[in-house]
Amino acid sequence: MIRVLAFLLLLLAAFLIYKGALLLLARDVKQGIQRLAYAISGFWIGLPLLIIMAQKKFNISMIDQDEWMGWLMFALLPNILFWTIIWILKGLNKDMPED
Image 1 (cartoon, rainbow, N blue to C red):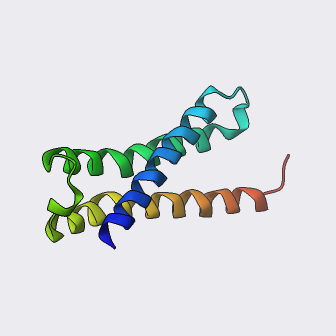
Image 2 (image 1 turned 180 degrees about the vertical axis):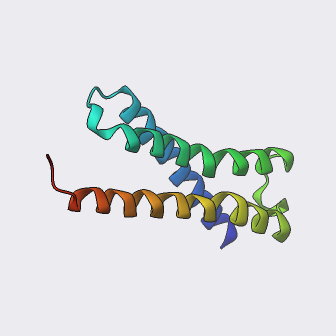
């Protein structure tokens, strides 16, 4: 179960990095915060996971519970908070009338 979850989270990180790269290459200026958010999000999730996996020679079964909890607390939960703040700010921005 943990292997499947780790694989899915690694795919999510790769997708976010890909989406961030596409948005960084786009010419539409309106999506500026989304461009940065996708890129940061992908690296925030993926980079610590890849470092942990590299230390264990990419054998997911060797990653112990403390490392998973550390990754969850310092990579995944702050990322969720980051996206929640963006979602709230984006919603507040839509309610404001334009001049």
